[in-house]
Each structure stands twice: as C-alpha cells, then as structure tokens.
Length: 496
Ligand code: NAD
Image (cartoon, rainbow, N blue to C red; front, top):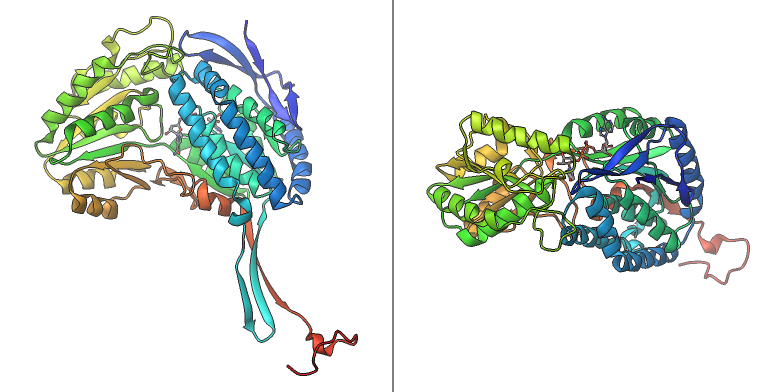
C-alpha cells in the first residue's frame, strides 16, 4: 500500500486537486512507498494567498514572540530527531545516523535564528548633523519561497526557513518530489511550536509548481538549492520577474593531498567524504588530487578501507553506505564508471562488482586512479559513490586544476605544513575551504555558499547573509523640533 503525500497549506494537510502525482520509492527495497501530489499553478496561488495573509500578521509579532516560537521549534526538532531521521532514511536511503546528523546540522540554523532580536538590531548615529539622527532598520520581505533538493530533505529547508521566519516572513517550501515527507514533519512541528497557520507552507510538486512560484507576483524572494542547470534557470527566471534569488548549484569538490600529509588521517577523511551518503552530498569529495609521490600510498590506503564499508539498507545500524536515490540515478552512476574505464582510468575498486543487496538501488564504492581532466568522470558531477584520483607533480599544478574547474563549492587540503595550507586558502577560487577537514560546511553563524557554477546570485545561504537575504534595509533620517520651541511648557530651558 502506498501513502498519499499532500501539501501543507494554511496550517493543515491539504490534498492535491490537480490530478498529477509522482511516485516515491524506498531506495533500499526498490518498492514504491508513496504517491506525492503535484501542485498546479492554481494550487500554488491558493497557498501563496494564505501565506500572504499570514505574513502580514506575522511581521507584526514581537521579536520576543518570534524567538519564543523558534526556541519551542528547536526543542521539538531535537525531541523528534529520530522520527525525522527514519522518514529521511525511508525515502532517501542514507543511513540513520547520517539522517540524524542532517537534522542536527539543520537544527543549528534554528538555534542561530533564536537570536533574532540581536540579529535584526540596526545602527544608530546620534547627531549626524545638528539635531539630526540617522538609523537603520531591517524589515521582512513578505512571502519568500524555498525550492530544495532530494539529498538533504530536512537540513536544506531548515537552512532557509529558520531565518526567513525569524525575520518576519512567511515561507513557502517546494521540497524535492523524490523524498517529500520530511517537509510535512517540519510543518507539523512548526505548528506545534506555536507558529501561526500560513507562515510555513509546503507545496509539493515538480517544474509546474516551481514555475508558478517563480512567476507569482506575491513571492518576493527565492532560495534554491539543486543542480547547476536548474539553479541557473531559476536564477534567470526569478530575477527577470524582479525577485531576489539565491540559487546554489552543483559541485565537483577536490581534495589536494600534499606529499607531507598524514596519510591515515587523509584516507579516513577522504573515504568518509567521498562515500558517505553514497556520494550524494553537494560537499562530497569526488576528486582527490595527489601531489608528487603521495599517489601510490594514498590510493592503497583508500582502497584498503573500502572493503570494510558495509553497503545495505540505511535502516540497518550496521550499514555504512545506503542505496542511491533512484534506479535511474544508480544506472547513470554505473555508466560513468564504464566511461572512466573506457577512457583509460584505472579501476582500482569497481562498485558494479560489489556484493550488494539485489533489491533496491544499490551500487558499491568505486575508486578510479590516473583520471585525466578531459574524462567525463572528471568533468561531470557524478553524485554517487565514485572517487577519482588525479595525479599531479606540484602544488601549483594541483591548484591550477582546482581553479580551472567550473564548479567551486568546497575543497580541502591535506598537509602538515601550516604555510602551505595558508597559501592554499588564499589562492584557491572556491567558496568553502577545509584544512585537514574534508567537508567544510560552515557552522550556522557563518554562511554557506560556493563560487562560480556552484552559486548564482550574490548572497550565500543561512547565517548573517541569510538574515540579509530575507530582509530589506531601510535608513531613517530624523529631526525633531527643539522642545524649547514647543508652545506647551515642557519645562525645558529656553537656551541650551
Ligand atoms: P535538482 O536540480 O534536480 O532538483 C532540485 C529542485 O528543483 C527540486 O525541488 C526539483 O523538484 C526542482 N526541479 C527539478 N527540475 C526542475 C525544472 N526543470 N524546473 C524547475 N524545478 C525543477 O537537484 P536534485 O537532484 O534534487 O539534487 C542534487 C543536486 O543538488 C546536485 O547537483 C547537488 O550538488 C546539488 N546540491 C547543491 C547544494 C549546494 O549547497 N550547492 C546542496 C545540496 C545539493
């Protein structure tokens, strides 16, 4: 039996009426577990109308009231972490501990947003000119929308909605149609936390719902996270319609391993970052650039670790790596391994030959060595458990390779040399840099964002930049009549 997965409009589950739906699978069994409604433009319009009314009231609520709702939501998320993790694992496939980690990283953004009274403080200049004061305030935009990818069905919505709502906006979420259920748990918990109906809305769907949001005149801003071609088109259409847009795209994250690196530390880090969540992370390491003579040692160390990774259902606590999101994606990733082999890469470990459960969308771990920059396994974002090793002679050659890549989300350097690491952080054209840290996702009080084809727009997501994105600045210049000139005697001295 499949579960019907609907929208959340005006504070309640709302069945779709468009007649269009899509299948949702349990990737560990390959069976269809749900059927998700796809919103039409008319349903999106109804959702935005409800959100607009709610936004008008919510922006009047005091900062302390908003902070209280966020504190309550934080507690509920914390209490319901296991429940949310189970929902994520059942539709995404990642292991339960990773799903719980996703909730924890999302929760950090709620904790950050509880500081909204502090975050929205403006500046004040007394006596900017004689008798004139100048001050700045930040005000909400109204209704803002978030369009999110399948790979973090709880964390990425939380990157967006915590700040958007704290800043006094209503937030409309269009989750991925591949794993839509986590969004509804978030909706229920927001309501339980005391958020007024309509301030958090979920419209399920595909391109039709997204286009309706991009074209809707009452949506002031769009936050998007997903693949680069879609990010680019969302940015173009949204900005053409006069909206603020931040659109985060795909990635091809490189680790640069210098000859002096601690090999065990680097190999442990690289294995976790390349194969965790089956490589379906925008900050996954998919290329290791081995400098000088480090290549053989590193490839051996990574290869030695791979047989120890247990591939299986994410719901099994012994599993290290779960399935891919769909059969189609699994086959696409397997196709890349074939292309790499045909192009001359050395297939050190072949995920197609791994012993994996026969049902479900499983693929083992793959390690490709001697990959060249012109091979498709290097040029394309694979988004699966495939690690390519490119060998270079020098630091400069490795740096040049990273800087010429069109993607620029995250990168990491492995070295014991502080000066080399410092030089790398200065030289590299990438938005997030790890120094002996493989997945440098910033904590919630910094902001997250790549460069180049990994981000369209000029504002990174969450943290201080998120607060700016979801608010408009206003500057007030004020002068008051001198109280000494008042016709009513206020008791002021006549001269001062
Ligand atoms: P995707 O681009 O296919 O989908 C993202 C969202 O866009 C979904 O909600 C989807 O329904 C919608 N969408 C898909 N096609 C559309 C279209 N033609 N028009 C309008 N909307 C459309 O991405 P995905 O497969 O869900 O997620 C994986 C991708 O997301 C990877 O490329 C990954 O690198 C990227 N990602 C990036 C970040 C980041 O922070 N930069 C974070 C997570 C994921």
